[in-house]
Length: 97
Image (cartoon, rainbow, N blue to C red; front, side, top):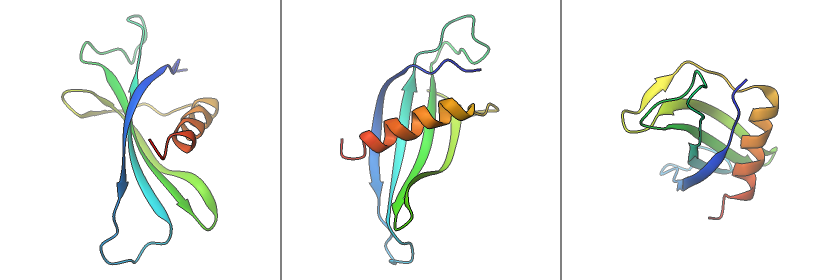
């Protein structure tokens, strides 16, 4: 289990230039604080890239992946259900920041 401690983020609203997609899409880059003894730890830092969608069915995470900050190398880890819920709630609360 990954112990998630989100320390910051950047978010950008994505533009659909052709108007093909319904709703709004946001790209989040979440910064994580990972302890040195965690298998996910990296000297460069770890983040989560999240594609967050808000449409007629409500808000949801469309896609995410963990990555090593600085190199953008994708890490082969998945979030536990409770961790995904934490990320969902964090994104939902911060789409306007």
